[in-house]
Length: 98
Image (cartoon, rainbow, N blue to C red; front, side, top):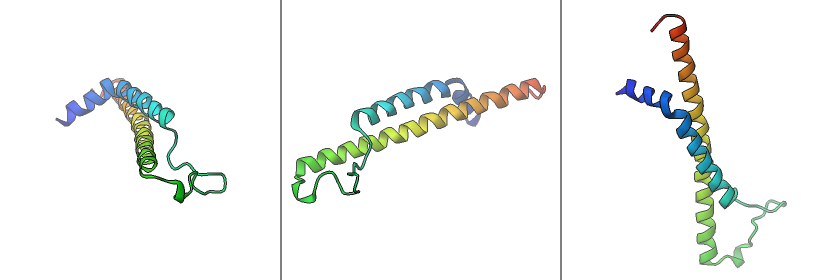
């Protein structure tokens, strides 16, 4: 079971990581970064102007932006892990350990 997981990571990790990066970048690009603040550090919308619909939209936007950032981190990590595993396997073959 563990061996098949690492074989899958080595074989498909770069492609899956790239797909996660593209999806994460699209989410961040489409929704913007979370927690928009003015230059003074205050929220863009004053509290008294927030209605229920705007608050729901803002919460949804923040959630999708956080998901996009998480997908970017996951994608880069998967690509790095796949690359490192490939280098370890190539090194083991070069040294005659396999």
